[in-house]
Length: 447
Image (cartoon, rainbow, N blue to C red; front, side, top):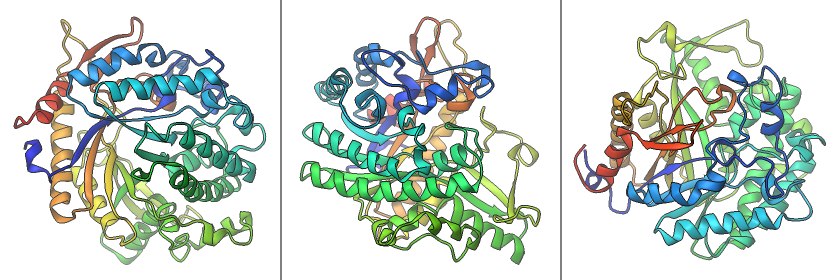
Protein backbone atom coordinates (compact mmCIF):
# COMPACT_ATOMS: atom_id res chain seq x y z
CA UNK A 1 0.00 0.00 0.00
CA UNK A 2 1.26 3.45 -0.91
CA UNK A 3 -0.09 6.97 -0.75
CA UNK A 4 -0.79 7.08 -4.48
CA UNK A 5 -3.28 4.22 -4.06
CA UNK A 6 -5.60 6.72 -2.36
CA UNK A 7 -7.75 9.21 -4.28
CA UNK A 8 -6.09 12.40 -5.47
CA UNK A 9 -6.10 15.04 -2.73
CA UNK A 10 -6.64 12.53 0.08
CA UNK A 11 -5.41 14.09 3.34
CA UNK A 12 -3.14 12.39 5.87
CA UNK A 13 -2.24 13.88 9.23
CA UNK A 14 -2.00 13.35 12.95
CA UNK A 15 -4.01 14.54 15.96
CA UNK A 16 -3.62 15.71 19.56
CA UNK A 17 -5.72 17.49 22.21
CA UNK A 18 -4.85 20.45 24.42
CA UNK A 19 -5.24 18.97 27.90
CA UNK A 20 -3.48 15.78 26.89
CA UNK A 21 -0.25 17.43 25.72
CA UNK A 22 0.04 21.12 26.63
CA UNK A 23 0.79 21.12 30.35
CA UNK A 24 1.41 24.62 31.75
CA UNK A 25 -1.86 24.11 33.59
CA UNK A 26 -1.51 27.14 35.85
CA UNK A 27 0.69 29.35 33.68
CA UNK A 28 0.11 32.59 31.81
CA UNK A 29 -3.41 33.20 33.05
CA UNK A 30 -4.97 29.83 32.17
CA UNK A 31 -7.98 28.98 34.31
CA UNK A 32 -8.69 25.48 35.64
CA UNK A 33 -10.79 23.02 33.67
CA UNK A 34 -12.88 20.06 34.77
CA UNK A 35 -9.96 17.79 33.88
CA UNK A 36 -7.66 19.70 36.22
CA UNK A 37 -10.21 19.21 39.00
CA UNK A 38 -10.94 15.59 38.15
CA UNK A 39 -7.30 14.54 37.82
CA UNK A 40 -6.52 16.10 41.21
CA UNK A 41 -9.32 14.13 42.86
CA UNK A 42 -7.83 11.04 44.55
CA UNK A 43 -8.74 7.76 42.92
CA UNK A 44 -10.02 9.16 39.64
CA UNK A 45 -6.92 8.72 37.45
CA UNK A 46 -4.73 5.63 37.20
CA UNK A 47 -1.44 6.19 38.98
CA UNK A 48 -2.66 9.51 40.39
CA UNK A 49 -1.52 11.18 37.16
CA UNK A 50 -2.54 14.70 36.12
CA UNK A 51 -2.18 16.86 33.03
CA UNK A 52 -0.26 19.55 34.91
CA UNK A 53 2.85 19.02 32.78
CA UNK A 54 1.76 16.36 30.27
CA UNK A 55 4.11 16.62 27.24
CA UNK A 56 5.01 20.23 28.05
CA UNK A 57 3.92 21.09 24.51
CA UNK A 58 3.07 24.63 25.64
CA UNK A 59 6.81 25.31 25.96
CA UNK A 60 8.04 22.84 23.32
CA UNK A 61 5.64 23.34 20.42
CA UNK A 62 8.31 24.78 18.15
CA UNK A 63 10.55 21.71 18.41
CA UNK A 64 7.52 19.40 18.26
CA UNK A 65 6.46 21.01 15.00
CA UNK A 66 10.03 20.75 13.69
CA UNK A 67 9.83 17.02 14.36
CA UNK A 68 6.43 16.86 12.68
CA UNK A 69 7.85 18.59 9.60
CA UNK A 70 10.85 16.24 9.56
CA UNK A 71 8.40 13.32 9.49
CA UNK A 72 6.65 14.78 6.46
CA UNK A 73 3.36 15.41 8.26
CA UNK A 74 1.57 18.34 6.63
CA UNK A 75 -1.81 18.29 8.40
CA UNK A 76 -2.12 18.66 12.17
CA UNK A 77 -5.35 18.41 14.13
CA UNK A 78 -5.18 19.97 17.61
CA UNK A 79 -7.61 21.58 20.04
CA UNK A 80 -7.89 24.92 21.80
CA UNK A 81 -8.07 25.10 25.58
CA UNK A 82 -11.24 27.03 26.41
CA UNK A 83 -9.96 28.03 29.86
CA UNK A 84 -6.62 29.21 28.44
CA UNK A 85 -8.49 31.67 26.23
CA UNK A 86 -11.42 32.48 28.59
CA UNK A 87 -10.27 31.52 32.11
CA UNK A 88 -13.78 31.73 33.54
CA UNK A 89 -15.51 30.33 30.47
CA UNK A 90 -17.10 33.70 29.71
CA UNK A 91 -16.09 37.34 29.99
CA UNK A 92 -12.62 38.76 29.63
CA UNK A 93 -10.11 37.08 27.36
CA UNK A 94 -6.69 36.02 28.56
CA UNK A 95 -4.28 37.84 26.19
CA UNK A 96 -1.43 35.40 26.81
CA UNK A 97 -3.67 32.44 26.08
CA UNK A 98 -5.00 34.04 22.91
CA UNK A 99 -1.44 34.82 21.86
CA UNK A 100 -0.25 31.25 22.46
CA UNK A 101 -2.57 29.90 19.79
CA UNK A 102 -1.56 32.66 17.39
CA UNK A 103 2.04 31.57 17.89
CA UNK A 104 1.13 27.91 17.47
CA UNK A 105 -0.84 28.59 14.30
CA UNK A 106 1.91 30.80 12.90
CA UNK A 107 4.48 28.09 13.65
CA UNK A 108 2.38 25.51 11.79
CA UNK A 109 1.91 27.75 8.76
CA UNK A 110 5.61 28.66 8.68
CA UNK A 111 6.48 24.96 8.40
CA UNK A 112 3.89 24.20 5.74
CA UNK A 113 1.65 22.33 8.19
CA UNK A 114 -2.07 22.99 7.83
CA UNK A 115 -3.91 23.33 11.17
CA UNK A 116 -7.20 21.51 11.69
CA UNK A 117 -8.60 23.10 14.86
CA UNK A 118 -10.97 21.41 17.29
CA UNK A 119 -12.80 24.06 19.32
CA UNK A 120 -13.81 21.80 22.22
CA UNK A 121 -12.01 18.63 23.26
CA UNK A 122 -13.58 17.95 26.68
CA UNK A 123 -11.84 20.53 28.89
CA UNK A 124 -14.76 22.65 30.13
CA UNK A 125 -13.71 25.60 32.32
CA UNK A 126 -14.25 24.81 36.01
CA UNK A 127 -16.12 28.07 36.51
CA UNK A 128 -18.87 26.81 34.21
CA UNK A 129 -18.99 23.40 35.84
CA UNK A 130 -19.57 25.07 39.21
CA UNK A 131 -22.80 26.42 37.72
CA UNK A 132 -23.99 23.10 36.35
CA UNK A 133 -21.67 22.52 33.42
CA UNK A 134 -23.23 20.85 30.41
CA UNK A 135 -26.32 19.96 32.46
CA UNK A 136 -27.12 23.70 32.45
CA UNK A 137 -28.39 25.53 29.40
CA UNK A 138 -26.13 28.43 30.40
CA UNK A 139 -23.13 26.39 29.25
CA UNK A 140 -24.67 26.09 25.79
CA UNK A 141 -24.87 29.89 25.62
CA UNK A 142 -21.33 30.25 26.99
CA UNK A 143 -20.06 27.81 24.38
CA UNK A 144 -21.66 29.82 21.60
CA UNK A 145 -19.88 32.93 22.86
CA UNK A 146 -16.59 31.00 23.01
CA UNK A 147 -17.01 29.77 19.43
CA UNK A 148 -17.69 33.34 18.36
CA UNK A 149 -14.49 34.54 20.06
CA UNK A 150 -12.14 31.94 18.59
CA UNK A 151 -13.56 31.82 15.07
CA UNK A 152 -13.27 35.61 14.81
CA UNK A 153 -9.82 35.68 16.37
CA UNK A 154 -8.20 32.98 14.22
CA UNK A 155 -10.30 33.10 11.05
CA UNK A 156 -7.40 34.28 8.88
CA UNK A 157 -5.21 31.33 9.94
CA UNK A 158 -7.63 28.38 10.16
CA UNK A 159 -9.39 26.89 7.14
CA UNK A 160 -10.76 23.75 8.79
CA UNK A 161 -12.69 23.90 12.05
CA UNK A 162 -14.17 21.11 14.17
CA UNK A 163 -16.82 22.18 16.67
CA UNK A 164 -16.79 19.24 19.09
CA UNK A 165 -14.73 16.15 19.77
CA UNK A 166 -16.82 13.02 20.41
CA UNK A 167 -19.95 14.42 22.09
CA UNK A 168 -21.15 10.93 23.02
CA UNK A 169 -18.00 10.19 25.01
CA UNK A 170 -17.83 13.36 27.09
CA UNK A 171 -21.55 13.26 27.85
CA UNK A 172 -21.99 9.51 28.45
CA UNK A 173 -18.66 8.67 30.08
CA UNK A 174 -18.48 11.96 31.96
CA UNK A 175 -22.15 12.48 32.85
CA UNK A 176 -23.68 8.99 32.95
CA UNK A 177 -20.90 6.58 33.93
CA UNK A 178 -18.87 9.14 35.89
CA UNK A 179 -15.57 7.64 34.71
CA UNK A 180 -14.41 10.86 33.04
CA UNK A 181 -14.63 14.46 34.12
CA UNK A 182 -16.72 15.94 35.60
CA UNK A 183 -17.65 12.59 37.20
CA UNK A 184 -21.43 13.00 37.10
CA UNK A 185 -23.65 9.92 36.95
CA UNK A 186 -27.10 8.84 35.84
CA UNK A 187 -29.65 9.69 33.15
CA UNK A 188 -30.61 12.82 35.07
CA UNK A 189 -27.17 14.22 34.20
CA UNK A 190 -26.65 12.57 30.82
CA UNK A 191 -29.89 13.69 29.15
CA UNK A 192 -29.61 17.45 29.81
CA UNK A 193 -25.88 17.36 29.00
CA UNK A 194 -26.62 15.52 25.76
CA UNK A 195 -29.33 17.95 24.70
CA UNK A 196 -27.32 21.08 25.46
CA UNK A 197 -24.31 19.56 23.68
CA UNK A 198 -26.39 18.74 20.59
CA UNK A 199 -27.66 22.32 20.51
CA UNK A 200 -24.11 23.59 20.92
CA UNK A 201 -22.87 21.39 18.08
CA UNK A 202 -25.29 22.89 15.55
CA UNK A 203 -25.28 26.49 16.78
CA UNK A 204 -21.50 26.39 17.03
CA UNK A 205 -21.45 25.36 13.39
CA UNK A 206 -23.65 28.29 12.41
CA UNK A 207 -21.48 30.76 14.30
CA UNK A 208 -18.27 29.35 12.86
CA UNK A 209 -19.62 29.54 9.33
CA UNK A 210 -20.63 33.17 9.84
CA UNK A 211 -17.19 34.13 11.15
CA UNK A 212 -14.78 31.91 9.25
CA UNK A 213 -13.22 32.77 5.92
CA UNK A 214 -15.35 32.06 2.87
CA UNK A 215 -13.16 29.12 1.85
CA UNK A 216 -13.16 27.50 5.31
CA UNK A 217 -14.66 24.09 6.05
CA UNK A 218 -16.76 23.64 9.18
CA UNK A 219 -17.04 20.16 10.65
CA UNK A 220 -17.45 18.19 13.84
CA UNK A 221 -16.31 14.75 15.00
CA UNK A 222 -18.09 11.66 16.28
CA UNK A 223 -16.91 8.61 18.15
CA UNK A 224 -18.44 5.45 16.77
CA UNK A 225 -18.31 1.73 17.48
CA UNK A 226 -19.22 -1.14 15.20
CA UNK A 227 -21.74 -3.54 16.77
CA UNK A 228 -22.31 -7.15 15.76
CA UNK A 229 -24.92 -9.46 17.32
CA UNK A 230 -23.92 -12.09 19.86
CA UNK A 231 -26.08 -14.50 17.94
CA UNK A 232 -28.16 -14.00 14.80
CA UNK A 233 -31.55 -13.88 16.52
CA UNK A 234 -34.27 -11.20 16.48
CA UNK A 235 -33.62 -10.20 20.11
CA UNK A 236 -29.88 -9.79 19.59
CA UNK A 237 -30.37 -7.92 16.31
CA UNK A 238 -32.72 -5.51 18.09
CA UNK A 239 -30.07 -5.07 20.78
CA UNK A 240 -27.58 -4.14 18.02
CA UNK A 241 -30.04 -1.56 16.65
CA UNK A 242 -30.41 0.00 20.10
CA UNK A 243 -26.63 0.03 20.57
CA UNK A 244 -26.18 1.72 17.18
CA UNK A 245 -28.80 4.33 18.06
CA UNK A 246 -27.00 5.22 21.29
CA UNK A 247 -23.32 4.93 20.34
CA UNK A 248 -23.38 6.02 16.70
CA UNK A 249 -26.58 7.93 15.91
CA UNK A 250 -27.60 9.83 19.03
CA UNK A 251 -25.63 12.98 18.14
CA UNK A 252 -25.30 12.36 14.40
CA UNK A 253 -28.97 12.02 13.47
CA UNK A 254 -30.06 15.35 15.01
CA UNK A 255 -27.38 17.32 13.19
CA UNK A 256 -28.55 15.68 9.96
CA UNK A 257 -32.09 16.90 10.59
CA UNK A 258 -33.44 13.49 11.59
CA UNK A 259 -33.96 14.19 15.28
CA UNK A 260 -32.92 11.91 18.12
CA UNK A 261 -33.35 8.20 17.24
CA UNK A 262 -36.01 7.74 19.90
CA UNK A 263 -38.06 5.34 17.79
CA UNK A 264 -35.33 2.80 18.54
CA UNK A 265 -34.54 4.08 22.05
CA UNK A 266 -37.89 5.18 23.55
CA UNK A 267 -36.37 4.98 27.03
CA UNK A 268 -34.47 8.21 26.29
CA UNK A 269 -37.55 10.28 25.40
CA UNK A 270 -37.13 12.17 28.66
CA UNK A 271 -34.48 14.21 26.86
CA UNK A 272 -37.29 16.52 25.67
CA UNK A 273 -37.88 17.46 29.30
CA UNK A 274 -34.77 19.65 28.96
CA UNK A 275 -35.79 21.29 25.68
CA UNK A 276 -37.42 24.64 25.00
CA UNK A 277 -39.81 25.55 22.18
CA UNK A 278 -37.96 25.70 18.88
CA UNK A 279 -35.08 23.49 20.01
CA UNK A 280 -35.90 20.66 17.63
CA UNK A 281 -35.34 22.89 14.62
CA UNK A 282 -32.05 24.18 16.07
CA UNK A 283 -30.42 20.73 16.32
CA UNK A 284 -29.57 20.49 12.60
CA UNK A 285 -26.67 22.07 10.75
CA UNK A 286 -25.27 21.46 7.29
CA UNK A 287 -21.64 20.65 8.12
CA UNK A 288 -19.04 20.61 5.36
CA UNK A 289 -17.55 17.42 6.78
CA UNK A 290 -17.77 15.04 9.70
CA UNK A 291 -14.91 13.32 11.49
CA UNK A 292 -15.22 9.61 12.21
CA UNK A 293 -13.26 8.19 15.16
CA UNK A 294 -13.39 4.44 15.68
CA UNK A 295 -11.38 2.27 18.02
CA UNK A 296 -13.61 -0.71 18.79
CA UNK A 297 -16.02 -3.34 17.63
CA UNK A 298 -18.51 -4.54 20.21
CA UNK A 299 -20.33 -7.85 20.29
CA UNK A 300 -23.80 -7.01 21.59
CA UNK A 301 -26.44 -9.18 23.18
CA UNK A 302 -29.95 -8.63 24.44
CA UNK A 303 -29.89 -8.17 28.21
CA UNK A 304 -33.22 -7.94 30.06
CA UNK A 305 -31.52 -6.85 33.29
CA UNK A 306 -30.37 -3.51 31.81
CA UNK A 307 -33.42 -1.23 31.83
CA UNK A 308 -33.63 1.58 29.26
CA UNK A 309 -30.84 0.14 27.09
CA UNK A 310 -31.80 -3.56 27.10
CA UNK A 311 -28.39 -4.66 25.84
CA UNK A 312 -24.90 -5.45 27.07
CA UNK A 313 -21.55 -6.01 25.38
CA UNK A 314 -19.21 -8.97 25.63
CA UNK A 315 -15.75 -7.97 26.83
CA UNK A 316 -13.06 -8.41 24.15
CA UNK A 317 -10.78 -10.31 26.54
CA UNK A 318 -13.45 -13.02 26.78
CA UNK A 319 -13.67 -13.55 23.02
CA UNK A 320 -10.36 -12.62 21.32
CA UNK A 321 -6.70 -13.36 21.99
CA UNK A 322 -5.09 -10.07 21.00
CA UNK A 323 -6.17 -6.67 22.26
CA UNK A 324 -4.48 -3.29 22.52
CA UNK A 325 -3.09 -1.91 25.77
CA UNK A 326 -6.55 -0.41 26.34
CA UNK A 327 -8.13 -3.88 26.13
CA UNK A 328 -9.75 -3.10 22.78
CA UNK A 329 -10.16 -5.63 19.99
CA UNK A 330 -8.18 -5.02 16.80
CA UNK A 331 -10.81 -5.25 14.07
CA UNK A 332 -10.08 -3.13 10.96
CA UNK A 333 -13.43 -3.91 9.36
CA UNK A 334 -15.07 -1.94 12.15
CA UNK A 335 -13.69 1.25 10.59
CA UNK A 336 -14.49 0.07 7.06
CA UNK A 337 -18.11 -0.70 7.90
CA UNK A 338 -18.67 2.49 9.88
CA UNK A 339 -17.23 4.70 7.17
CA UNK A 340 -19.66 3.21 4.69
CA UNK A 341 -22.51 3.53 7.20
CA UNK A 342 -21.77 7.25 7.63
CA UNK A 343 -21.35 7.66 3.87
CA UNK A 344 -24.93 6.43 3.36
CA UNK A 345 -26.24 9.62 4.97
CA UNK A 346 -27.12 11.95 2.08
CA UNK A 347 -26.73 14.90 4.48
CA UNK A 348 -23.01 14.12 4.96
CA UNK A 349 -20.86 15.69 2.24
CA UNK A 350 -17.36 14.65 3.25
CA UNK A 351 -15.76 12.33 5.82
CA UNK A 352 -12.34 12.43 7.43
CA UNK A 353 -11.07 9.75 9.80
CA UNK A 354 -10.02 12.29 12.42
CA UNK A 355 -8.58 9.74 14.86
CA UNK A 356 -7.27 6.22 14.34
CA UNK A 357 -4.61 4.53 16.41
CA UNK A 358 -3.76 2.13 19.21
CA UNK A 359 -1.83 1.88 22.46
CA UNK A 360 0.77 -0.84 22.91
CA UNK A 361 3.54 -1.55 25.43
CA UNK A 362 6.22 0.62 23.87
CA UNK A 363 9.69 0.66 25.35
CA UNK A 364 12.86 2.30 24.02
CA UNK A 365 15.81 -0.03 23.53
CA UNK A 366 19.09 1.74 22.79
CA UNK A 367 17.23 4.82 21.62
CA UNK A 368 14.79 2.99 19.34
CA UNK A 369 11.12 2.03 19.77
CA UNK A 370 10.28 -0.99 17.61
CA UNK A 371 6.48 -0.80 17.73
CA UNK A 372 5.72 -3.52 15.20
CA UNK A 373 2.16 -3.99 16.49
CA UNK A 374 1.33 -0.33 15.83
CA UNK A 375 2.86 -0.47 12.38
CA UNK A 376 0.64 -3.41 11.49
CA UNK A 377 -2.37 -1.72 13.09
CA UNK A 378 -1.90 1.43 11.02
CA UNK A 379 -1.38 -0.55 7.83
CA UNK A 380 -4.57 -2.51 8.44
CA UNK A 381 -6.69 0.51 9.35
CA UNK A 382 -5.37 2.63 6.51
CA UNK A 383 -6.15 -0.27 4.20
CA UNK A 384 -9.69 -0.39 5.64
CA UNK A 385 -9.98 3.34 4.92
CA UNK A 386 -8.70 2.82 1.38
CA UNK A 387 -11.21 0.05 0.72
CA UNK A 388 -14.01 2.31 1.96
CA UNK A 389 -12.74 5.27 -0.08
CA UNK A 390 -12.89 3.14 -3.20
CA UNK A 391 -16.60 2.65 -2.53
CA UNK A 392 -17.43 6.22 -1.49
CA UNK A 393 -15.77 9.39 -2.73
CA UNK A 394 -16.96 11.12 0.45
CA UNK A 395 -14.06 9.58 2.40
CA UNK A 396 -11.17 12.01 2.01
CA UNK A 397 -8.79 11.90 4.98
CA UNK A 398 -7.06 9.86 7.69
CA UNK A 399 -5.44 11.23 10.88
CA UNK A 400 -3.35 9.08 13.21
CA UNK A 401 -4.01 9.32 16.92
CA UNK A 402 -1.73 10.49 18.31
CA UNK A 403 1.37 12.44 17.35
CA UNK A 404 2.81 12.20 20.87
CA UNK A 405 2.34 9.79 23.73
CA UNK A 406 0.15 11.76 26.13
CA UNK A 407 -2.15 11.93 29.14
CA UNK A 408 -4.78 9.34 28.28
CA UNK A 409 -7.62 10.67 30.46
CA UNK A 410 -8.66 8.29 33.25
CA UNK A 411 -5.90 5.84 32.24
CA UNK A 412 -3.17 8.38 32.97
CA UNK A 413 0.17 8.00 31.24
CA UNK A 414 0.31 4.21 31.01
CA UNK A 415 -1.23 3.77 27.53
CA UNK A 416 1.00 5.07 24.75
CA UNK A 417 -0.81 5.97 21.52
CA UNK A 418 1.89 8.17 20.01
CA UNK A 419 3.90 7.97 16.83
CA UNK A 420 6.51 9.67 19.02
CA UNK A 421 7.60 8.24 22.37
CA UNK A 422 7.71 10.74 25.24
CA UNK A 423 9.92 10.20 28.27
CA UNK A 424 7.77 12.05 30.79
CA UNK A 425 10.66 12.54 33.24
CA UNK A 426 13.02 14.19 30.76
CA UNK A 427 10.50 15.20 28.04
CA UNK A 428 12.77 13.59 25.46
CA UNK A 429 11.01 12.75 22.18
CA UNK A 430 11.88 9.53 20.34
CA UNK A 431 10.12 8.87 17.02
CA UNK A 432 8.95 5.28 16.98
CA UNK A 433 9.41 2.96 14.03
CA UNK A 434 5.74 3.62 13.20
CA UNK A 435 6.59 7.32 12.80
CA UNK A 436 9.29 6.45 10.26
CA UNK A 437 6.90 4.08 8.49
CA UNK A 438 4.32 6.88 8.28
CA UNK A 439 7.03 9.25 7.01
CA UNK A 440 7.98 6.78 4.30
CA UNK A 441 4.33 6.30 3.35
CA UNK A 442 3.77 10.06 3.11
CA UNK A 443 6.89 10.28 0.95
CA UNK A 444 5.44 7.84 -1.55
CA UNK A 445 7.05 4.56 -0.49
CA UNK A 446 5.21 1.26 -0.40
CA UNK A 447 4.62 -0.01 3.15
